[in-house]
Image (cartoon, rainbow, N blue to C red; front, side):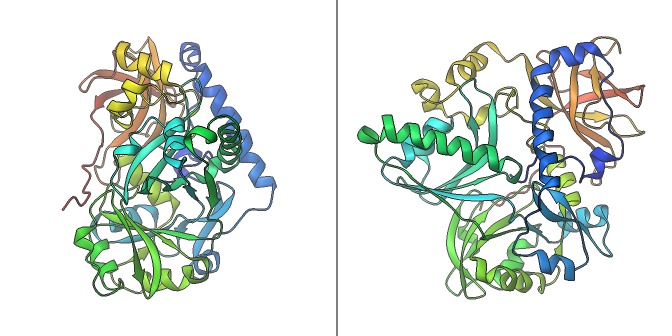
Length: 430
């Protein structure tokens, strides 16, 4: 996951060459999505007028020469002095980079009703997770649209650690509050009470890259073997003598860890990680290009409240047992789309050389005339040396190898649907 916000101005991939749709049919096809997105951007703009929040690493970012920009209501580093986006991107792919993701919202849901409550809000099979294992999931509205994407970690049947996106904090917390109130009124008596705790102030850093385990191993306490912590697993362990929550995974497609750190120790633990070669600080710009190469979604761009998990190519988050029980919010639409197919699907595109396609660029059929969708994210890939993008396209035009066209700066360019991820993932599975 990662993170995953509605702000567009902080990323050069959007700001440098936005490509507004000039094809009415595209707007008709995706009007609900674009309306939702406009509302999200308005919400994001309000953050810029208010005082921006800071993570516990704000002073460290300044000391390291971070270029701080507004992102999800926070001042966050886009890049760092002396290291450009592309160099930082390659360093994470080949060595080890550290990202501050402390702007994301960390939660605990606990109590006898926690499992049933979260299984109402998500379509995932949380009951089958083993202790201290996790899954990517989505929070769904009653219509089956995605309110947010999230990582849910099960510590026990009565305790779950949940991470949601900074750019959706206001919406998510209001929604959780409403759902908890309804649960307390109608369900708690038979299924159990639920307690919700927000870990405000806690640090969260993502150590990513092929040498991440080598770096972290030098700081974890004696007796803890990182080899036992495979992708999707988590544990409590000491890092530089501080008890932290360590989850193996991330938002880059590389091996790595997301480390939740008590507020009073966030800066010290982070500095200790950065002091170990070859770790370098990495910012939002590299994070965005890495996640796009990994085929991972950015909420407010590739996903929003109009997009279902089936349209978003996330059908795998809908558990088999949940399909049978159909007892989660939005189940009617989700199950119908699983059976009959959705009207549109998220796909990967390889686009011919030239200016890269950006969010909003129209996607056309091979004839270059018929409008079939819209680009949701796009960059020149540092790893592949090609223009890549993700798009929502009409069902039937989503299969790998399908020839399409994309309108980039009023010029029609050749494109081909490709399987995601663009760059193979290197998660550690033991």
